[in-house]
Length: 275
Image (cartoon, rainbow, N blue to C red; front, side, top):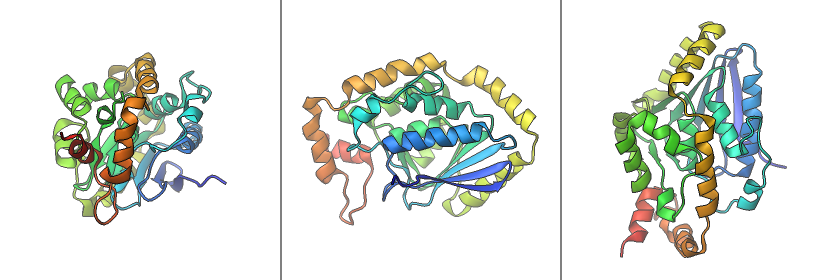
């Protein structure tokens, strides 16, 4: 039986808190796509829901990245979602357009697919423990979940290219300065802050919340078609034979600190790429 990854607490009919939990470092995998699709449908059809907070109880990790050992053939063969897009893109497009505000409470590593998830949400609060990034260039891959379409709208073209082409770890303070996240909040305070902000939104009228979101979406969200070339590029670049030895080295010794805890991908990739 597949383990549940998204644990929902219905704080009230208008406010849900969702905790992501998938293994010791919160990897995303094909089961994540199926379960996220089901969660999004549940949110879409909840008549009174106005705000959802996404969070993690896994120390040091929000969503680490896509599982390098996942069955990519299973992913490539998935049937399109309701938007007509591949489920990976379908989930993120629908997540960004939900008729409720979505907030991420980020207290740990959030890279690759994890970064693509938070970029598809409305509001991102980060503590000093957060680390974000799109490391894919370091393993010879084009990111597939839409950061090329989303990041430039948030941080500007130059900083988007710095993040995507540098493939480095972006600490929370820098992420806040760039606009990658909304603001930096002390780790000891972020839970209470996010909860208070969510409760404020939950007290407002759903018609007003939905109407505001739709109009902001018109001005700021990419067209759905902008995401398709990125995923196609991901499938054509991921797992190329010439990069497999490096990825294997990364899995074997590049991601482990002496205490056995996974370190930051950008740092590990930079270290192993040194001549």
